[in-house]
Image (cartoon, rainbow, N blue to C red):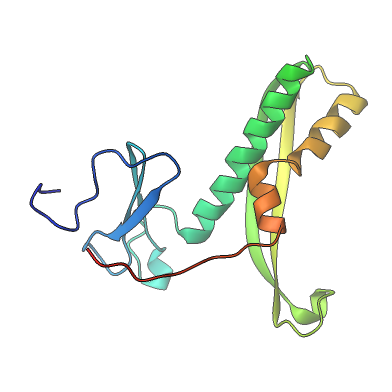
Length: 155
């Protein structure tokens, strides 16, 4: 971005800050900045986007998946569990009310998280690692009470 652009994202954002800004390319494409990292987010073509990057729900799933794998890895190393590799596959879907046990809601948001382990692991090791998945900070955030404060700021 040009240095005189008042909308330009700084070269490096402070830790814990993420900035999202329209790129001006296509209908939905966004530039996402975190620290010194940059990526593009978009919507699939079937929703009017250009499919030039993951969509909002895919980014949410990526957050949960990466945190899950990192938390499991940290636990396995701390407990000297012979975990060679962990992989997490996630899916998001909306389930109609009749399929949910939540009355009064039109949909229940459901995330399915499949975890695969590689290594010489006992059944007890696998059970411990699976229980650790729910302890990852992003899982706790998503299943806890969340307050989102939205405000307009001026340049």
